[in-house]
Length: 283
Image (cartoon, rainbow, N blue to C red; front, side, top):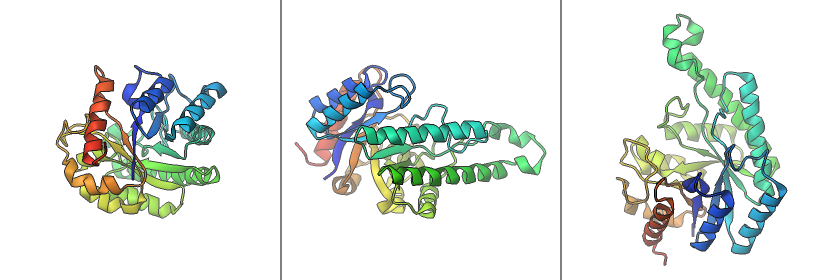
């Protein structure tokens, strides 16, 4: 059976990491995905006391933990070597911290086009066409992904590369891309984080699931109508959740709510959990 889980991102900045985890404990969640950010939970500033508090709370309540790499200003395909190296260093620090808190999976996003990309059609040079810049960025990302997978493997951590094709300037354009990248690196430490909301933006969730198959090691859940990435509570958009019931019920990992409702965050999470529990026929 899957572990119904929540992301601390749902409550940012309303609740601290510790209070978000306690909320999960109080309301019967079985897993927590900790969203790293530079404001209240960053590998370079998190204290040993905070680490021990999270470990103790998870251990005492049988929580499975995962970590989401800080996405703000990090880009594992950056054209600037200094920025790229810093992004990789922060990912490695996140992987180390992941192990320190007793987690086993770190979610990352695909790389992005460099800032020059929106303007490169105005540069009359074959080295700066959109196609050339995109391919160069993809190669940098593949190199980063391979290095990250090797590092994660040495720390007994799995990287979950999230499908994210609906975002502007994202290198990923479809599920076939992410499957090709994961297969090409061929590491036991590299899996896919299937984001159901993002998959709906691609057009067919079932097709994305079929393409990714057993590469999927972690799942994000939120709703939308296929035209805007809303991170809506489950049942509020156009996703046919009933058609996904068999997949979700048989998934052996974390089903992680990633819903956003800034005026009623707690309510949106609890309504989504009730929706999911009913879908999975859980009390």
